[in-house]
Length: 149
Length: 307
View 1 (cartoon, rainbow over the protein chains, first blue to last red):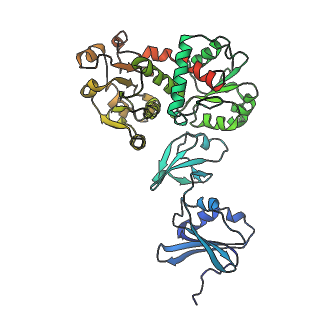
View 2: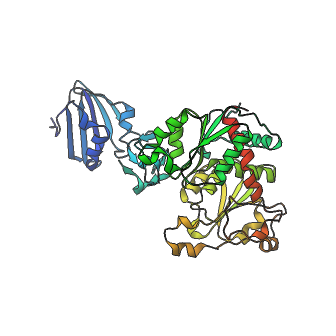
View 3: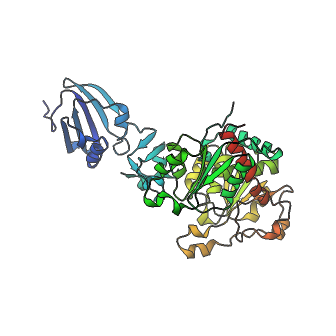
């Protein structure tokens, strides 16, 4: 039997195939530091697909698709495994939502979202390569201009 | 049935072709007849956080010609915003004093935030380099008056196509109508790639040029813009492109332009358009400036549900 590098959970969600260096960013977007549940985080696990991958296991919580999609921008290959009684009962992929709220900074220094205490809102106008348009200033950004908050 | 009642006017992107035509038809009606009591009892709050004379006066005049009242602050430095109050709080208070808000702000997206915050209609009168949708409506109105239709035209855009917000908005709006667009600019001031890609995706036929003389015979309309010195961080770069285009009566008459060729310009101009053009049948830019009143009257009446 293969030994798990990160212990199994009984019921909950496993977010697998995270690009290893983005693991903590994913945890932060999902507000995991504020969780009181059991959370197991692994980094630099070997992966055929990614070389090195990260994994987050959340005991007692099933992430819904909307929550999971928030991480699609930085972990586009992530898979979501829903666990019941130690068994995978459902596998899902993440996909970019239509709008990213409070995740990406608008790159335009003259945008109101960089001056008022409001959540940023970026519409996804194109998924590959990712292109975002600010709800407020309407500027579009892609590639290096996309900066996480 | 098309209705603009309670609709915010923040970006030309928010308008369908039908809504645009509805507003333009209403502007024609406003030009033909006066409605001095249409907005009686209604109050417009003008919030100009950036200096503007013409746009502000045009809105105030339009509201008063329809029988409405206008309130405003003397200058932004006299408001509680300089004491650190957020824009959201400020507009929530002003919402209680008025039926409609017109806002100009140096920060891009401020009008959108205002519209998201209050429950009364909001009109964007210009937010930085982003949008100035009522200008686009009056540009479209001028073309419609001059040419009789917005369909099937060959429209040239000349000057600063990189930073010119009026160009981007007008091109976006004209893409609703089958037309040909010719973008004429110095290489450093071409239309941004993302704007061109969006036009391509919307099926617009366009081409890019650097010489006006080479393509002017193909144009029904020319939308001429000023090369804006304030957009250049490096004065050397500005020196390189300023004065690239100088249209004059003798130049245009010496070229084989179409007999009903028309020139628009959002004004102010610098040296790209000589005064000798003003009295020619090509020039419609002063009519364009005057269109501000019927167009803004129409938009105020439409979103306040009076028509």
